[in-house]
Image 1 (cartoon, one colour):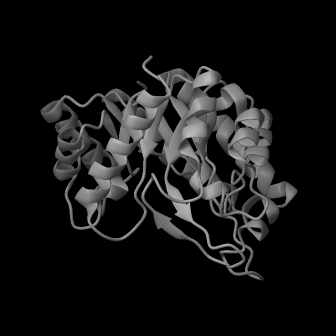
Image 2: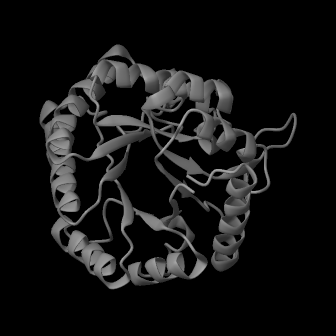
Length: 285
């Protein structure tokens, strides 16, 4: 089976980093995804804390967020954002982190509510904002190539890379093997212009470097959404994972729990469901 990671949002608020690593082991996850920072710690201090947990638990599959806010008209601010991310890449790569979930900065339309997702992100960005993202990530990708690590744009509402089509276009313009997509259908299904899982896979193809899985309840004819267990909701994970297996996906898969309630129950419930799903579709390699 592909390695299955626990996102930090299972055990984030009110828990320390050691607890996250211990819970991942206890419930049978293969690794964890972390934020790109922790509280008031410096990057050096934070990476040292992560290194301690990797050594203590022998968990080898660790991914990390690496947001780079390039939606700023000030060139010096954009340059500083790239430099900060490059420093994180170098320090994290030195302790064995190879995959980074990345975002190019929020692009929010003040004339619409945030939940009008199709009016945000790629539905709002102008040509200049596209160029800022392309230029910044070309610089950052040179660092990633040097370190032999990969970046993956999460398909996340409110960003240029919110849907499969604009993400594919952004990747085409950056043109680096070091960057691909983190396909998150739990975000795409909330966007009025969102693609189906089949279409998203067709659009992104072999540029899918990482996967996020979560699920949502959507009420027919009504606005809004409710995060729910991975096995419930409107996303057919079985069909989607069968498709990923068919295209030969070999990367990591991270489960998320962006909802309130019993964290241990979520961790147990989601991994049991997902491992059973992979066994059902015979995804053993």
